[in-house]
Amino acid sequence: MFQSVVDTAARETLRLIGPDPQNWIPDRQGIDHSVAIIGGGQSGSAFAFALRRAGIGKVTLIDAAGDAASSGPWLSSARMNKLRTPKGLPGPELGLTGLSFQAWYEARHSTAAYEAIDRIARVDWAAYLD
Image 1 (cartoon, rainbow, N blue to C red):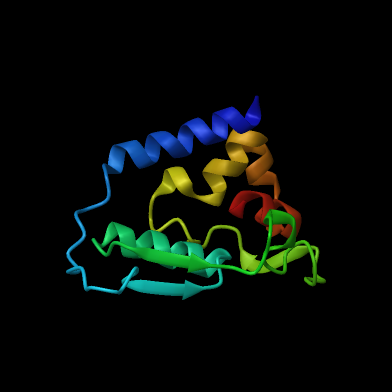
Image 2 (image 1 turned 90 degrees about the vertical axis):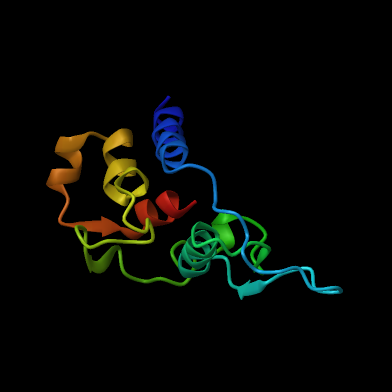
């Protein structure tokens, strides 16, 4: 149930910002992408989203991880239990509050639960990015 609420809120945010702008990069023969991003984790995914929102089409995202459990350091090599970054700083949502960690966490747990945490648990961050 919580997952559908979270997905619905994110989908509504994406609906409200409208479709991606038309690709302004001209096609070139023999070239199948305008930008290749190596690493589909937190930063790579945010860059790909930002490029599409800026009207750059044919963005290719390449990642070695086969699934969310093996992508990024959050569930594998990260040793801290909580992120060092304060919870209120902007993240990869590009200013769209409906895609923020806070919106995700509150939809899953409640506004009071978000207020009660001081920093974001790394496993929660991994789930949010997934």
